[in-house]
Length: 185
Image (tube, rainbow, N blue to C red):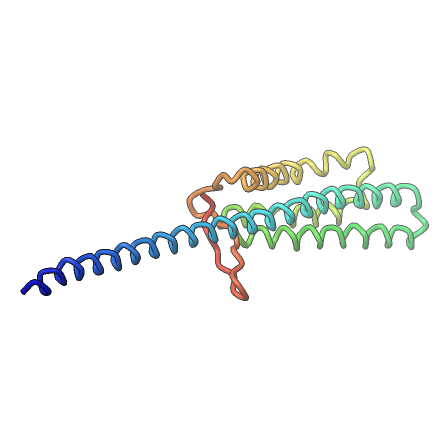
């Protein structure tokens, strides 16, 4: 009878320690998951910010190349080779901007995707019309695009600060070979 009296508390002690170990393990797993999610969000935000930087550079490259195209069209009405090179350069800059804008827009809600598409199409129209526009009037030609660009730039600023665009906004998260999308918090 003495031995069974001692074994009961030892059984309860072993079960209690096992349960405590299980709880500790679950808590460590939770903390690890939170840490991995935090690192993934930071990587995604960094990727998003690099793309924002490239998109901003591409926008000003479009402005520079359309201005060069307008100046070359105004200067050399007879030199079509120079004008074609300037036009191709401007169209290439618009294409690069549109590609980067599409990449960023894919991680946003429908309203923001529409805005980015509208900006790309506006820039295409500006590049087409820059040949016929006097260089002094280019700023006026860019006014609608500048307004849309400011809104896009605000999206980049919000992402840099970690502020959500709205409840359905998200950023990409890279997990191995798969890409998941998480909501900004």
